Image: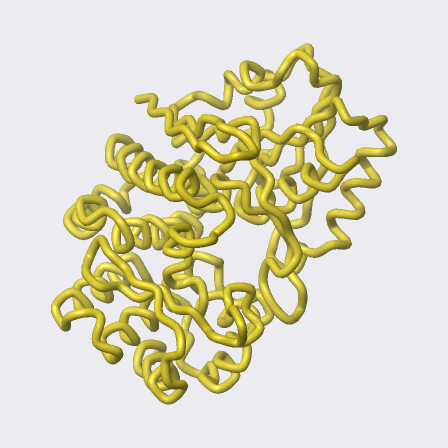
Length: 358
């Protein structure tokens, strides 16, 4: 199967290609004017898949830089270190950065490309399910501060995003399931059929049946590409992609980015947003039950019950999606449609968090 979804933005139009084995064709996406390529990856990803990428780049001057795994390393200091390594290896404005890894790598690699010499070419090759369906597409790049996630960054579009579903076969079970929550998100916000796939084909999804994996990746990528094409910089429609992320990011920050994988925190955030939608009156009881049921059926999720809702609400005020001091929530209105609401009573938010995180 090969599917190509164009992302069309004022900055650039580029393909997001979903194709088994595309890793071996990576050189097709390196322009002739590029003099050196710099691969940002992790040791784990390189040990699993690096030989295929290295073979694909044979004859192209390339260097491999390793980023330690984990959100705690998604910091400006890591970007500075990588930029120093690029400079030491003779990088110039004809260089290209290749982000080859999960969401942390694509975010950090993308930010590096955006700011090195005020911008060099970028190729994203996401290797986790979460990065393939979300983080690697759309040009959001950045790093964390202690006070919050992705508070420093930029919108910087790649030349292409290469998505090889083959690599998902090597993902640890927990990492794979974390990515599935982002697929569920896409179904809730925009595609009832994708949601039904996740609801009805649980066994096939969890056993990583190739046709089903290809279908869920393609469905999520199509949605991401369409939304980003309509709204590159989150001025309107793109905000729907934040379903579950407002509270999810607060959960990650509150626990020091050490307890939850990003997709797991988003899952808890979606559960809280779904409960809030029902309490606030935008979502009926049956749809709320279905959304929560499908999220839980792809667990287990790490425990979140002891997290203080008051602390989470305090963190929400510092989220980058808070505008003029008002917290904006993406709330389901039905399966396949969401609304954005602000000015929700804090007591209702606290109740939703308490009831959903138990």
